[in-house]
Image 1 (tube, helix red, strand yellow):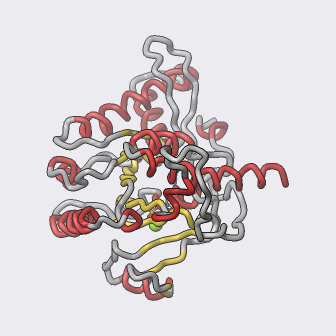
Image 2 (cartoon, rainbow, N blue to C red):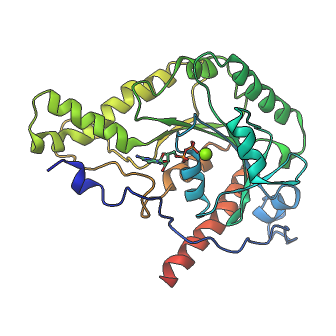
Length: 310
Ligand SMILES: Nc1nc2c(ncn2[C@@H]2O[C@H](COP(=O)(O)OP(=O)(O)O)[C@@H](O)[C@H]2O)c(=O)[nH]1
Ligand SMILES: [Mg+2]
């Protein structure tokens, strides 16, 4: 029996955690805070009702899968121009095929319109132009005093199922301080793929099936540290935080009894709680953190409603 037969139950199709739901009201309600000094989500929403995130990652890094999960959506996002006009997805698809990609477009999921995402396709080798483009976009957003137009966080997706998860171009991104003051989380995706490589390495090293399975969590964590985390930590402007999607390996170094498995984020029972928790933790501005939590709480509310109706 191949080891992943019992670890993976449902890898064939993306299966959503919740169905798509009606959009929540986007207009902020004016409420008076009981404590006038402390900002509440309602106060913040009066000037900025959306949390704006730049998502960076090569094609197939798992960005769309992640965003759908965060927003509890099975549908693709709607696309809006920088001035807020809705764009026909077919036009975007055509330009994507021609190799163009517009980072300034705003992606919004009907199921959680509290988020605005900007999508950047990441950096392959020799993509100095693309790094410049992202740098210009971040710099332009940093210039504005308008909180709702600023970038509030960057989610940088790195697929771990490749030989070199952190490319030279990506090291350059982190060495040249492109992100400025915007908090950035490095998100390691496709950990289940890394785990498969770890299993192969263990078997190649002579471990039988049972032994390899017992050592798997530790080995995967070691590979994650060596090939993903350390190269980023050694850069001049490293990420503010790190999250591995679907692979929460405890820091138990000596025992060989860790049998936790990584999960494929396409599975229905996966979630992004760790990413949400860490994103909230790296937002230094109190008011913005409150906005983020309130945008996300709407989502948790939706999840709870869905669970109750099942
Ligand atoms: N094995 C595995 N595949 C995934 C995972 N997340 C997404 N994928 C698949 O990887 C491919 C690219 O994902 P997508 O979210 O479209 O990536 P994007 O191009 O960065 O938006 C799709 O076929 C997804 O179904 C994961 O956690 N594990
Ligand atoms: Mg995508």
